[in-house]
Image 1 (tube, helix red, strand yellow):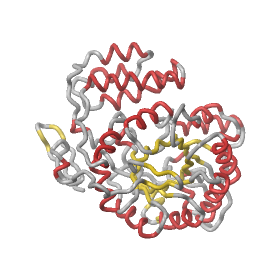
Image 2 (cartoon, rainbow, N blue to C red):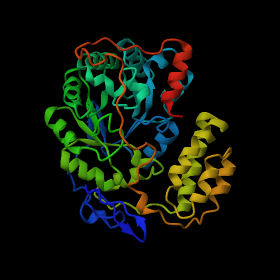
Image 3 (tube, helix red, strand yellow):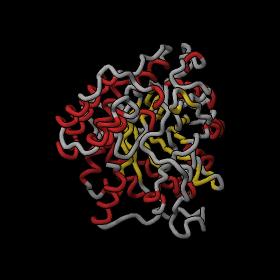
Image 4 (cartoon, rainbow, N blue to C red):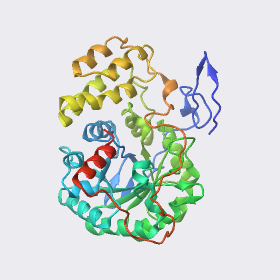
Length: 416
């Protein structure tokens, strides 16, 4: 993928993976799927079509957004990362975010935990509550997670990873368990090959790989070759994650890596209709053009009402503030209202503010591939002191125990 950024009419033009400016009919180079080209994604007993998964994202993939993405055609919609310790100790927000909606299928929950006891008990409780799929987070790169030895730090220690996956699979019975990982800590400490071996040996139904290290965060370009390499190493399904901004990117990823499905993260922020475009191209059809601003206002209204129903009038509106920035990003005339939307205190205020933009304003194609939500740049990954001294150690790292520590930990990880 080229990194050149040409200018068009004085504005930066972002390029497709094929090097064509966004909006210049990328589909001329990437045809829709041929009949029978791809198979439904097999996750244990589940058969998922299209083979598209909504990535678990903190403060994003709550029930309100999951339902929208499912209605637009996503195959599986996974909850945001929820801590096993918080669930076991009855944290109210953790239980709210783990709850499913009426008719939600497959109901998918992502579990974070670094202690096999916590993980096993949470998974058992989730299965008893009717969950259809459990995903495990071994890829989170943020310092508040890795410095406790969690997230992307766990695959550094394959024996600890194995204990955690084993505990989840044992407690899940017939419910499929999958894991999500990154390439590694940094280029000097690559962990995905060991993670793939552990996942397969311990009975995981599939593994998802984000083609970046924890040190890279969301910078640069995802390394799809790592996804292709992992596919050659394991017999369980491999899902690819990283830099799927348009439906055509998903087809390109599956065709070039051989992966069995794709995981959609930042590309759908403020664009839940991306899943209808994905469903179309996997069914061999051309997708509909992006909606005009007036239609997006209707989608925003629906989203805001769902957040208010889930979290209440105050927290729901506060949750919607960040979504307003994502939905309106790049629209002509929207910059003037974004500051007010970031401070709005009611649904009516949102509606009134949005009415100031011409509803026929077309979608700004130049922002399709613009990074959303996650900060750029790289980092030096924070790990517990002495964490790398013995990579064969399977002792769980210390987690918050007191109610006060746990409450702060849950609030930090929720992303809300």
